[in-house]
Length: 115
Image (cartoon, rainbow, N blue to C red; front, top):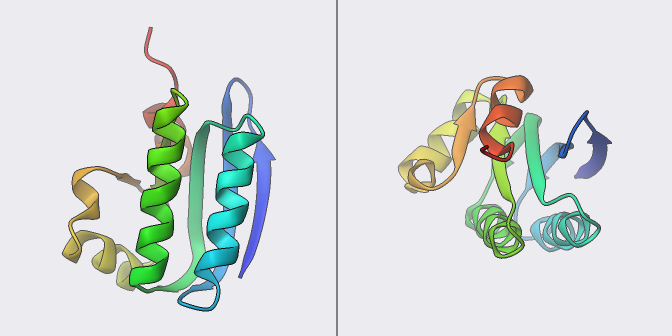
């Protein structure tokens, strides 16, 4: 699993994640996501175009990141999910509280501050 932050214009950053988010990698992903939020990236888009698998441990890590960002007045959104990964989020009901977007631009609009 890899995790790289790219700052966009404005207040939004994109975290590009690749690999698998499972029991072995989810703790590292969670630590990096929470650290990014603590570093000021409270409006964060997770680009999952290179993520091939997400387990329940990975889902839990996304939930923790979303709650952490929300507690700091921010928001997270996910984009470019591969079909099997998107299905996991939808079956688990995570699409009820996480924005699942097709592109990073769409996701960035979802997390931008509302005037």
